[in-house]
Image (tube, rainbow, N blue to C red; front, side, top):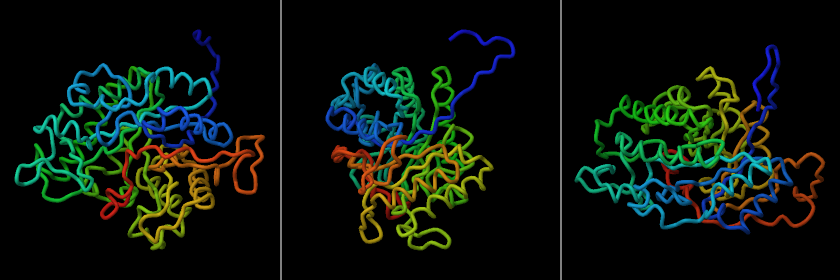
Amino acid sequence: MGDLKTGEILSLAPFRPKALYLSSYGAGNMRLRESALDLIGKTDLNAVVIDVKSDRGMIAYRTDIPLAAEIGAQKGITIKHIRRLIDDLHKKGIYAIARIVVFKDNLLALARPDWAVRTASGAIWRDREGIGWTDPFARQVWDYNIDIAVEAARDGFDEIQFDYVRFPDAKGLVFSEPNTEENRIAAISGFLAAARKRLVPYNVFLSADIFGYVIWNRNDTGIGQRLNDLAQQVDYISPMLYPSGFQYGIPGYPDPVRHPRQIVYLSLRKAEERTGLPAVRFRPWLQAFRDYAFGGQPFGGEEIAAQIDAAQSIGADGWMLWNPRNVYTAAGLPPKPGMVMNSHGGAPGNLGRIGTGTCSRNIAEDAPRLGR
């Protein structure tokens, strides 16, 4: 691109990502990936979130980071040619988001016990899935995850999205520094600030996933996530606004799964009010999986459409669909301009399912306390 002439105006078309999540397995499997691309081609979807580093610590493709190979993070390669994949997505006009799970990392915790979260007895602590976590105060852990992010940016991802960028919510755990609210907030915000500084040369956006209740809580929810502090460090905040995750409801709506639109809309409005930021600084995760907390009802086209409508009505920077099994249909999704949807909410032809890839984020893992 040449230099702009004096007085010349460069017009940029606004782009709001409307994404679906693919695990590293789903992105690496040709059949599942092509099914996803087919759905994107027929609906309003225009982006994908791909697991680069999963909550078990595996990195989806070959990396030049020595520590990854040392701890066994390269034993589950599912994407053979990441740059080729990103190039293919870009040729189709698809925005690519790299999801990197940060402090929930079983491989690193076991390989470097001095960087792991500990119990009061000194043992490596494990969550309800039996997975170890790394200490958010450990700068070596920061460096490792930021190295992964920088490599993803070099490979062509448009955005780096950090997940599990928080402390575990269990009580009585031991870290390398005192587990105070002030220290927790400083650690999480400090990590994001350090990542942002390292990523500046690569011209990528930076986002962070947070619990839905973080929007409503004035404190750090016990995990280092305080809304206003996070907002200063990232381009986009991505709250997980799954109605099933709001086990205590929100004011006026004690049964959230019956009111998916209100949960999303009112949460985003609260985020605006608390931060003073425009809605475009938020891009929510929406529920595209069966309820697990209020009776197990399916979440189909009606519920998905209601959540999308809420995000779009308030002016959020798009939205993202989460299903841990990588199972999606066109139900509830707006069609591409010019496409005609059938009576079941799908495009003509058999879209089928996008697959049953492995889950790299367990929806119920935090449900009892924080409501994933």
